[in-house]
Image (cartoon, rainbow, N blue to C red):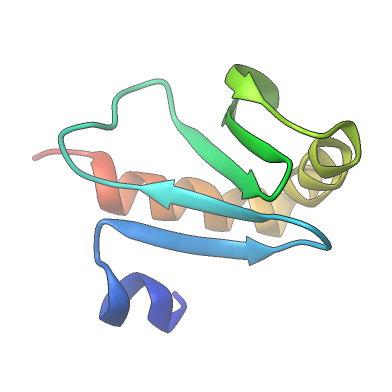
Length: 92
């Protein structure tokens, strides 16, 4: 996991930097199922459900969403995102 996950803010983890935005996973009481990530950038602020790779809420630039979905569609990247979501959000 990147240092952004463990050092700067253990409840907010940047998983990927894209061309014009970034993908984050948040932890803590505000987060809830289903597993999802946040696409944040100057023109994007939305939540993407990981199972379907569709926007749950918010708005985002089409090109940012396309790049995020392409990144998440790679099996290794998807596994990394799910691992981060579980680590930050699943309760024992």
